[in-house]
Image 1 (cartoon, rainbow, N blue to C red):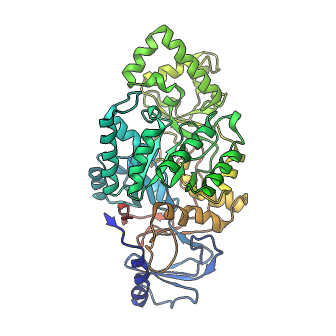
Image 2: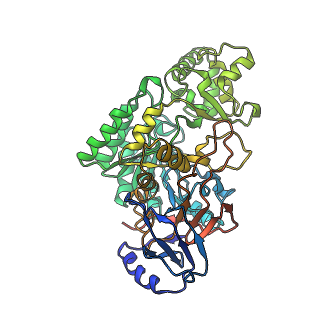
Length: 526
């Protein structure tokens, strides 16, 4: 565990650290992008005791460090901060190689309402692990609501609301960086505005943030964005529209309105930001193809409902609507299986392929029984190809957009996951900055470093500056690129030869080392 001290303490560190010789590590010959969005400059970087001791534009003597890294031809940047990551796998994959190899030095877990509980007990388990990157967490509304109310579709009683508020308060006291919601998922979808505002106010009182998987990202996208902003306004809490996107052909282009809504809300005093991954496909559960009301009460309740002919007919109509207008994108070829415990040969194939295999019409109506069967079998992890490149680029350009993977921790050979778990950050650098010019390279780095650090209130990370923690990523701007694809996702990126966590190289000369310097970060006191 590490608890972060006051901001002014950082100013006291640079002098004493800079005076120490020799440096533990000197990064020589590179150009520095310091994370602020300003142009690159030539400098050597000296590291002592896990912090940046010198940023020397005049260079450092060759013999001034116990070890030197030659960064000639490379960019020296702050370590990337993944503000939205599904890191439940950290307990069996504490090295988090699929994240670290992307240049990520801090991953933030607990998004979409799914934060850990009991909060402190879980963080202590993680603290006991040999971690590759640094780790931080949000507390999750869905986790808390489920613990108090199960999967009930109703408002909480005053006593239940008080219990949920206490759980948020405890998690914030124990180091949560804020509250996440997944109003698209059970049981968060059953929560009304006043419930979420009440819990957000508790998080705000401790200096936390609010991140929201919106209630709707398809036809109701504008309502979903408006609701998140209203929560921010009423609770007076900083907001992140997380993995922001426009789902389904009918909504393609709606990012024009949503980004304008962000600008309007910010002008009116609500602190709204965005995070985004650079792909035109999302990834979530197979369950989202089924209307939420049909899943109230859990799996057994759903199984009972589909046996009732009248209810099954209503469920079928809901599935067809979703396949046509939301995550189905109107084409079963857009619905791809990622991880399927009950039928492994579906992994990497589509719902269209399954319909053809089973001899049923490959249409939304024809797939209804397959969707119900799949959910009864235990659901699956899916990739949904339902976004438009124009929206991706428009959202990415917004000055308040941060880069975040929404990815899981992965091991080669396990399923056919979304490639974002291997390629998000290098893809932005290689495709959207270098090749497409959607972002300048300094701005791309800012969106991965100082912007998310500021959102989290981390004054000692996210920049290359004297006195700050030495989380550093060194990449080749000419070759950095993702390699993971939707059909062959288990490929590490290229062009990132060094990733330094707390002053220790975890990726060293392109090799993933056995060093595990990562720490659990707990939110600093406001």
